[in-house]
Amino acid sequence: MALYYDAATILSPEKHRGSLKSRIYGSSTFKSNPAQVYALICETAKRDVFLKEVLDHVQLLHDEPKLTPLLALFLCHDHFFAKAGIAAPAKHPLRQSIERHKARLQSEFTRARLRRKCASIDDLKSSLDRERATHARPHPRWARMNTLITRDTESVVGSIFGCKRKRDLDNVLNVDAGTVSYCHDAHVPNLLALSPGTEVTKNDVYKQGELILQDKASCFPAYLLLGNESKEEAGDIIDGCAAPGNKTTHLAAILSEIGSEGKIFACERDSTRSKTLRVMVEKAGAGGVDVLAKQDFLALDPQDARFGRVTHLLLDPSCSGSGILRREDIPKLALPDDQRTKSKKRKRQEAEELVSEDTTADAQVDLAPTEEEAPIPTSEERLHKLANLQTRIVEHAMRFPAAKRLTYSTCSIHEQENEVVVSRLLASQVAQTRGWTVLPRSQQIDGMKRWRHRGIRNKPDDSFDGNKLTEEELDACIRCNPDDEEGTMGFFVCAFVRDVDAKETSHSNGSSDRLDENDGGGDEEGSWEGFD
Ligand SMILES: C[S@@+](CC[C@H](N)C(=O)[O-])C[C@H]1O[C@@H](n2cnc3c(N)ncnc32)[C@H](O)[C@@H]1O
Image (tube, rainbow, N blue to C red; front, side):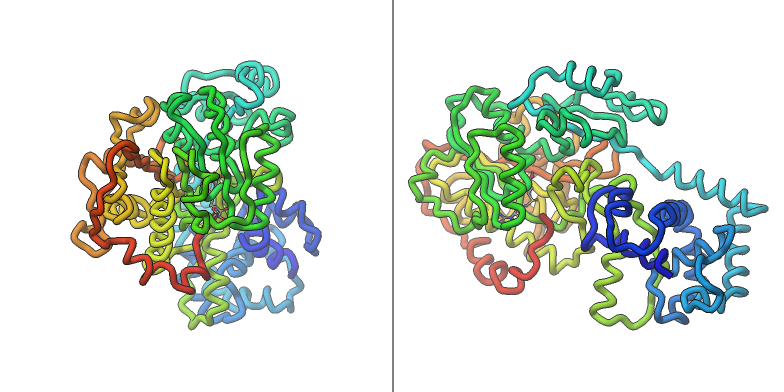
């Protein structure tokens, strides 16, 4: 029955991005009624944990090899909760795959209901609604005022959105549903927190590039890199992994605010994303940006005369994306366990179902470019390969002759891609020879100094890949957690600095430079380099 297949397709991250409604109503290939698909997904999301419990007890997937976990969840939802039951003819194989197990399903359903002390189906529905409400933490919509185009924040937000200014984030998050309000962020200048779900992309201020949708965490790198640099200190800048360009345009705005005439080289390897980068740079009015399209940063020659004045670099390479928030309206369903023998293709399909989500809460992909793709569960081996690539990219940045400050960032929550990479970088030959160290918290721009969440150490520091950072170095690292009261995505950033006047040493400990040749640069790594 098309309804169930269409609903499952909608939650696949492979071809579809954007809000739930835009995915459904924007699809030309669906056979079913969009309103029904939308209702099925939303209603199933309210009861997924309960339905998974029932399906796992019955072990339905074991007996029904043709059902995927998602299909089983949708069908079971309608079997129990839809007035007319499963929307398919009585003889349809999908409907039969559930109704064959009617008696067992019913008895597990009743047990699960009684475990929740619900006397009736209506009681059960209310109880599941309450359960869901306690788990959902609202996230603001973060929007950066693009000072390249406008500096009049109050008039843009006040008059165009017609919304009320609040004292702080708590006040913005706790307004009545449907009321739009905003506050200025306490850490990053020109950043606004708008009430969850505020529609921005249809507004002229967004269309004209005055307002850029960008998670608060994603504003940290450019601010940390340039926020407390003077016009004299900032020369040219390289953004090594730039598309779609949120951080590039932020860099351009800060450069212009400090009165620098330095130029920005925005380097992007992927051809489609290079086009997006160009569009974003133009829309943001970032005139001083030179887009290096389809350019691998690792292939840039640091000795090239073009880069002789590059003093600052921002490195935001591909990562596991484990800190990416789901869009609030794209549900991540709790799926029934599937213990069947899995073919490679099937494993992949299920991995996709597991992560059937879009990217950051502020990523209205149909209109606004996203920084990252949806995350996929990442094995230790994958993380290791990503960390190798991330390390190589920053090591390459450390080789630019006039470079004196750089930032390394990821939207990952894994220590292996974050503190461990910083630790490896500090131990690398290029860092030691050229005198790169981390920028201590005490020397960071005020907003970053005040940010409470700093580097962590969970992994043993005596392992090959250990996190060997000192307490001071950990304190120099900045973390954002996806599930706390700050309302950001999961993120990590660390700034490195070097004294350009100090003499280079010939020190060599042969650490990660050697390691990368053998371990990080192989073919396999090229086949999967994480999320962008
Ligand atoms: C996390 S995204 C960057 C997001 C971007 N900084 C922003 O704020 O909008 C990583 C980007 O780096 C690009 N990339 C990865 N490795 C690269 C390399 N070696 N050279 C150039 N670009 C690279 C990817 O194609 C992807 O577009």
